[in-house]
Length: 82
Ligand SMILES: [Zn+2]
Ligand SMILES: [Zn+2]
Image (cartoon, rainbow, N blue to C red; front, side, top):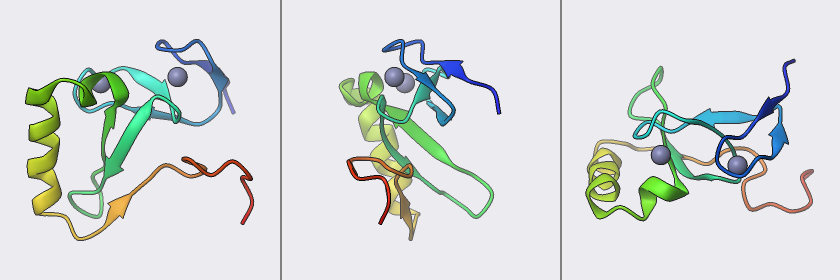
């Protein structure tokens, strides 16, 4: 498993997500939210893009055709284990 360095915050992590808007590969802490438009697709938005209204509303449009909302594992869960 490769350790990657998040280009946004500099954190070293093995868990990365790619922002579907700025295309950067970021750690899960820099990802605001992820959604699955279909079984095979996953769309994530980073915290930077989230602050941009245009990109955020694009993301919100995706929300409407999605049943399932997906958050990266351990996202906002300090204890890690269940
Ligand atoms: Zn980061
Ligand atoms: Zn982004």
